[in-house]
Structure formats: structure tokens, C-alpha cells
Image (tube, rainbow over all chains, first blue to last red; front, side):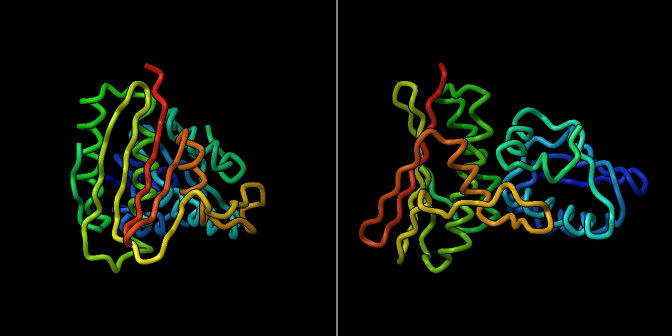
Length: 94
Length: 134
């Protein structure tokens, strides 16, 4: 199960498990983000490399127009994934 | 424990449920579970993406010997693909120069203590090994 909730234009919350079976739907949701936004991972339990790929693509698209995603409330496992992937260089993480 | 799964991304829910059963049965500590799921998804989805021709299901076996927990994935495979030999990933370039490809296998190697690969009789066998603390 995975879902994306928009709380206004600049706040997005992810819920559940972002794995390879969810990325097509997730990509459609991420495409709706057109300016800088805060993405809340509080209720995101799991992310796979497929999930990392679409997050990376969203950030690359936003950065090219001077915007970007700020990620908050990552659990310790997801924080490890981001550290090993050197995604702290790609995203602002709080 | 052993179970077969259709070669489809839609099998992931059932695979995660099977892993959770294995974690409980073999008393796998909470801290190791995420990384094992990550690695199993990576190897399984590679089998779905890069070896779709095989009509057989992917067999997944879970075992524990002492502190060594292993997950073995068995797939019919025409051409050998050893995940241990995946190319190095660029982790240092700025975002506009960086590509995310190859990241999954890089992270799988980081998360697992050992990965074994064997290819015999058109069958590929990947074994992911994690040493548990308890």
C-alpha cells in the first residue's frame, strides 16, 4: 500500500511502502509537484531503489527550474538508504 | 521455507508477506529486516526486468544457520547475470550529471554481508546473506 497526500501546493506526505509495484502511480503524483515543496516521510515505512529513482527524477526536474524538495521525518532505515546513496548531496533533508 | 512467485512486480506484496513470515519464524531482529527486504526486492525486480523470457516462477527460499540468515532466489536464466559484478556507481557528481541507474545493486551490496551467485543448467541462483546480531 502506498499513497501520496497533498496538503496545499507545497506540502506532500507519503504513506506506506514505495516499492517497484507502486512507482508508476507515484510518478504521476510526483509530476504534480511543480515548485519547491516539503515532503513528509513520517508515515513512509519503506523505499526501494525504484522509489529512489522517481524521487531523484522529480528533484532533477525541479532543480532545473530553480526549485527543490525538502525531505523531513525520515525513519532510521530510510535515512541509511539515503546516506549510502549519497542522497544528502541531492536533497535537503531535515 | 520455500515459495514460488510469479515473475511480476505485483508479486512484491506476497514476497514481503513471505519474508515477514520468515523473519518471525527465524527470529530475525527488527534492525535487519528493512535491508533484507530491500535486497530481495532488488534481485527479484532485476529478474522481472532483465529476464522476462523465462516462464517459470521465481523460487524464494529462506533459511537460518546460527547467526547467518539467507534468502535464495532461483530463476530460469538463459544468460548468466552475476549481480556481484555490477558496474561501479557514480555517487559524487552533482545532480545534473548524476544518473540513478545501478544504485539498487550498489545498495544491495552495502546492505548484505555476502552475495553468492551460481548459474547451472539455465538456472540462476542468487543467495543473499546477512549476519544477525542475535
